[in-house]
Length: 145
Image (cartoon, rainbow, N blue to C red; front, side, top):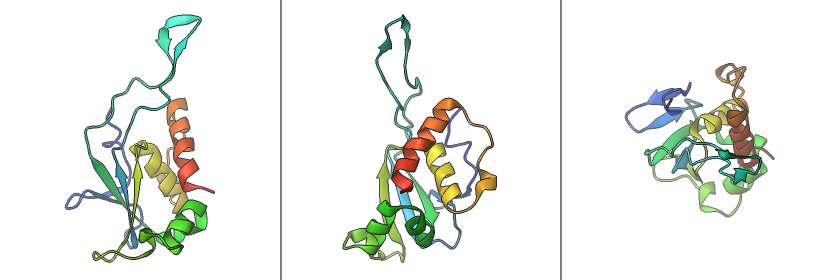
């Protein structure tokens, strides 16, 4: 199943942007999404099994999320530094949005973490696979303090 199809956020098809916060002032671009997760070495007891994901990377080049900078800065020291420091992300672009880029994260897990940050927990599934939980934890390392 393609994880980009199963996402729960509103989708603005005109510009490939998912609205986590419709009135958001920040565009978070996920470049090169859905990279292989936890690709590891062979299990020495069972050489036919491989630890990690067997899913291939998505052929999409990017996905954008419209989010609220206030939620991001309250939840994450990384985003607080980026949006309030001397970085290019701390200045709104010509489009009127703050622009932040992340790379390689799983789209579905990234969107779940953004929904949690924006207090939209009803959009987060109650049950996820162990692999998805690991991906959420990985995204959480970027998004949460």
